Length: 475
Image (tube, rainbow, N blue to C red; front, top):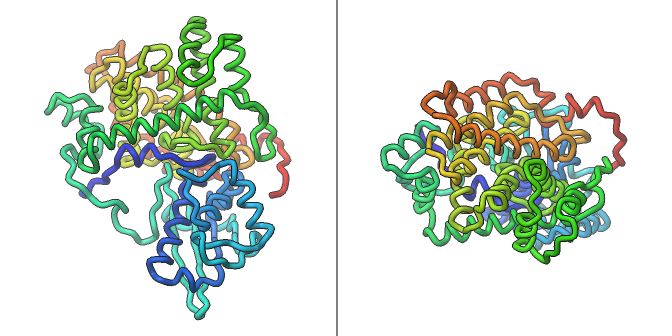
C-alpha cells in the first residue's frame, strides 16, 4: 500500500480565516485552476467564468467566506502574503466594477449573482466540499475542473492519483501510530527526532527549523493581536470579542510593549490554578477571534481549530518555561505527526467527520506535543493523544449561521484545556496499562464519522445551528 507523505508544513499552513476547508482550500483550488489555464495556454482566451459550489461549501460557504476566498484566488492573490486589511476593498471593487482580473492580468466580466452559484441541494459523491470552475473561451470552447477541499487546507483535483507534491524516500515511513512507535523503539529516537529526520528528505535541517519558527511567529503574532483587539466579529451575529477584555482583566496595569514582554508580564502576575485556566482560554479565544475576522492564522490542523495548539504551546511557554527555539520546534514537530496520523487514518474535515475531526484532532495534537516536551516517553505521548481524542468522539459541527464563531470559538478553549488534562493524565500513568491505543481511537473516530448524520457535518442544518434564533443580514 502506498503511504501518503505528509510534512510538518502540510499540517501547519499559513493562511487567512475563517476556515481551512471552506476558505483556504477553495482559495488554493482557485489558484490551481488559474495555473491550469495558464499552463494550457488559454488564460488570455477566457471570456467568462462560472463557479459552482456544492454540498457543505454551498450551505455554509457565505458564512465561511468561500466566495471571497475563491475570487481572491482567481485574482492571483495568495493567502500567505495578501494584506488581510485589503480584503473588503478588493471584493467591493469586483462587485462594483463587474470585472475580475484573472490571475491578475486578463480582465473578464464577472457577476456575483450569475457567475457564483451556491448549489445548496447538490452534492458530489467524493467529498461534501466540492467546487467546479468553468472557463468559457472566446473561441467557443470551455475548460472545466472540479476540486475537493478535503480539510485542513488540503485540496484534491477530480480524478487525480496520489498526492500533488513529489514523493521522497522517507527514512521512517509512517502510516499509523504503531509505525511511529516502531521507529522510535527501533532507533531510540524521540518522536520529534523521527519527524525531523523525515523532514530532511524534503529540505535542509536549517530550512525546516526556519520554517517551523516562522509558523510559530505567525501563531504568536495572531494570538498577541487577538489579545489586544476589541469590538465585534463580522458576519451579523454581533459576537463580542472577549480575549482582549480577559487579557486586560488578568494582567491589570502591568506594563509591556511587545510579545516577549507580555509573556514576562503574565509570568510575573501569576495568579494560581484558576488564572492559569483563564489564560489558556484567553490564548485560544484570541486566535479564533482573529480567525473569525479574516485574520492571518495557521492551520492547526484546521482554521476552525487553530487556537488549540497555539494556546497549549503558549501555556507551555508561560507556565512550564518552554521558551526556547528547540522546545518550540519539538512541540510543533510532535503535534504535526499526530495530525498526519489522523489525516491518514480518518479525516481533518468537519464536513466529513464533524467537529471531532477539527477540535478533537487539534486537542490530540496539543496533548501529545505537551507530553513530549514535558519529558514523557514515546508511549506516553501517544497515550496523551488518545485520551484527548477519546473525549471528543462524536462531537458535531453545527455552526450557527454558517459562521466559524458559535460554538466554534469556545470549543477551542475546551480543546486546549482537555489537551492539558490529557497530558497530565498520561504523564502520571504507566502506558503499559492503557486499554485503548491511539490507532484504535483513530479507527473509532473514522467509524463515528461515517455513522454521523450529515446534518451535523458543517451544513448548519442541525444542532445549535437550527435551535438558536438568529437574523443575519443579506449578503
